[in-house]
Each structure stands twice: as C-alpha cells, then as structure tokens.
Length: 400
Image (tube, rainbow, N blue to C red; front, top):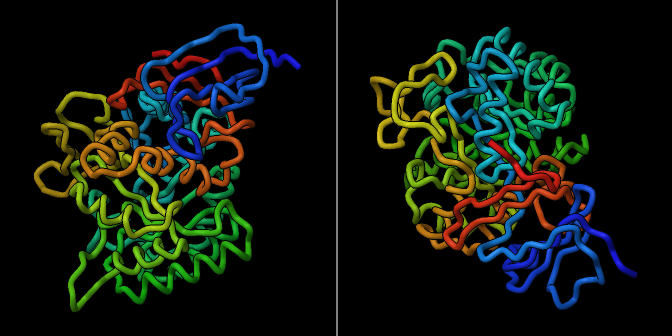
C-alpha cells in the first residue's frame, strides 16, 4: 500500500529510541505518520522530500518561560503583546510553550491568566504556570516581596477556573502557610504542584513531594509527579549540617517521584552541577527550562519582570541595583546545546529533557514532545551545532 505524505524528511533524527542516522520522518495532515530507519519505511509518495544534513529534533517544550522578544507575560498589555514572546521562542524551536507569571496581586493574576487562557484556547501556548505568590520571601529571587502571601486554596481554585483548564503548574514553597491546602487544591483542579522558591528543610521538601504524589494520584491530574521549580535556584543551598530542600528533591528525582527543572543556560548553574543532576536523576525525571524573560533574543539593556526593574548585561539578567538573577535570556534550544556541549549530557537525553519529559508533565505526551507517529508534526531542523535552521509546527514552517 502506497502512503501519501506531504513531507518526507531524511537525515539524522533524535527519536525516543535514541539518535538514528539514516532516519526518515513522514508527515501528513499536520501529523507524523511514520518515523524510523529509512530502509524500513513504508512505501510512500511524498509531495515534498527534504534531505537534511544536520539534526532532526522533535519540537521543544518549555515548561517555564516568562517572555522573550522584548515582551513579558507578567507585564504584557494584552494577548497581542504576549504573542510577541511566544513567536520569539517558537521560531527558535520551542513549538510548545508554557507561559509563566510571577508573584503579583490577585487582581493582576486574574487579568493575566484571563489573557493567557485565551491564547491557550487558540492553541498559541500549551498552558500556564504561576510562579507564586505562595513562596518564601527569603528565597524569592526576582519576585516582589510585597505581594508574597500565605497559601490561599480558594484563590487557586478561582485562577484555575479563569484558566479554563490551562493552569498546568504552580510554584509553592513547602513551608508556606497553608501549603498543604494549596497542594491539595492544585491536584483537585488538575494542576501540578511545583515545589520551589523555598527556604524549607529537607524534611519539609520530602513531605511535600509525598503529599503531592498522593494528591495527584487521587485526582488523576496531568502528571502523577510534582516538579521542582528550577532546582538549586531560589532554594536554601546545601550544607552538610543543613541539607535543605535540594538533596531531598534530588532523592525524589532519583526515585522518579519528582521532575526537576534545570536552567542549564550557563548562568543559573555551573555545568558540573547540571552533569551531576543528570547522573543522579531517573531517566525521565529532569526537564530543561529557560526561565526566560523579555530580554531573550534581545540586546542588553533595561527590562521589567513583573513589578521589578531588570538590567541585562552581557546576556545576564539581574535585578537593577542588585545581584539576584532575574530570569534567563536563552532559548530552549540554547539550553539543550549548552547541556550537551558544556555539561556533557548525552544528546538524546538532553533533547528528551526538553521535549518528551515536559510533554509528560503537561499530560500531552500523546500529542507533542517526540517524533513518534500520531504526534503533531512539530520538528526542529538544526545544523550540526544545534542551531536552528527550520522549525515546523503542525507540519507548517514557522515564520518571523
């Protein structure tokens, strides 16, 4: 039987089974219909055939992104402004993006979530992430301390209703007041607790992971596992007499009970730290993220993140007048490249951590995150140095 396809891509592909030279990816109707060794491909007739000399990757999935292209989700004037950030990352290979907000007054969160919910309904973003406001003031990073509040499960339910099912994750500090009630409410509304911005103890983190697992299993949410918001960053550091939350999170990731976010952009973490986490964590328990803000893809200068001023110098974003890192300026493909070239992470695993693993956190692994048949035809063609050449989303080239 001859299979009609719109596009046949051949070259070296990063598939779920690993890096495969001589691969063929067949696309029809916006979906991937077959992938594997070209020698084993079904008989087909293609409208277009492309032999790519670099690498063929699945479209990347960023679980934690505040903006890019000069636009910021927390500060956007409306959906059109937000789309500027979405498109900046999309043309660099992030075909599915979770828009992240920061700690803000409840009224501001309602307005921003409402705008983002519209973009999610239109398929422009994959979901929404709330980074606060139930976090530690001592480990707030680039968050406004004036708007950090005790846990409020009713606000969680209200924001989830406004989001219309698009609220995927929410950062909460395990030691925050009423954190348990917040975790229970998050699981109830189908949102994954993301444990972070915490000054809590090892015991508090271990307990929060267990509670999150219990609640997520009971409610059958997007994922049965919580995440850790950018592990190490915004957390009490490790000390041999006070291990804090990081080692507890690593223990959970090693067991496969938690998915640890890593900002492997060369700024937030040392390359050896990235390598150690990948060495310790279970195969599907690390996710690469950008934590990108408005300056991603933009020159150095002055920017905003929520209510705070940010200065970007030599690509490093810090709070103006301070030293706290205020988000990232990289695209997710940059993070993958640095994980491979600087931290020595295996290419297939680094790509997996930026595609299939985050797709699983979102509960969308059957639709995005890999080049397996049945997935949407989100494909990133890169050169040999993992720099973008062409991006397809639903089989359609992404333009400027």
